[in-house]
Amino acid sequence: MKIVYKLIIAFIAISIFYVSLNFAASELGGEVVQLIRNDSEGSTKNIRVWIVDARNQAWIEHGDINSYWINRLSSEPKVSLIRGGVEIKYTAVTDIDSHEIYHDLRREKYGIADRIIELLSFGAAHRNNCTGIPVRLDPV
Image 1 (cartoon, rainbow, N blue to C red):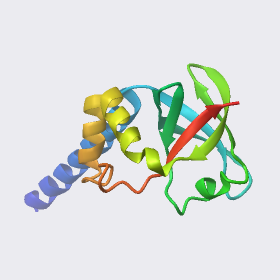
Image 2 (image 1 turned 120 degrees about the vertical axis):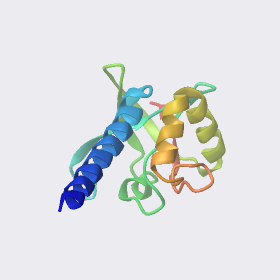
Image 3 (image 1 turned 30 degrees about the horizontal axis):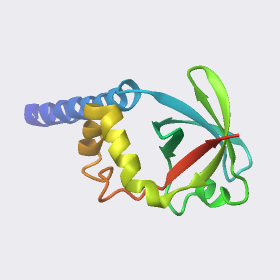
């Protein structure tokens, strides 16, 4: 019976470590902004995401080809971000051609945090396996 308790405690400890490491890497690993977007129920959601910048453009990656909000961007491209405590309005455009650029910039900006997220996702966040759609943010 002692072995069962030890296994349960080990499982709980590993789970807590996994969740804590994931949270620390994603929230403390670099700049996190709040994306304000509409959801399928018609309400507004604030989603915390990483952001990258280059050539006076910004990109985020949140959602895949089946995501409601990604599909709505062609008809409702206006989004807002809270960045540095300031709400900024953007026109959001899906930018599949920037997938490699986005991942390069993310690796450069977030470094070890990006690598940790990649490991904790068992490779799903790696550029070769990622199903996310980069979204270019053009200031309004």
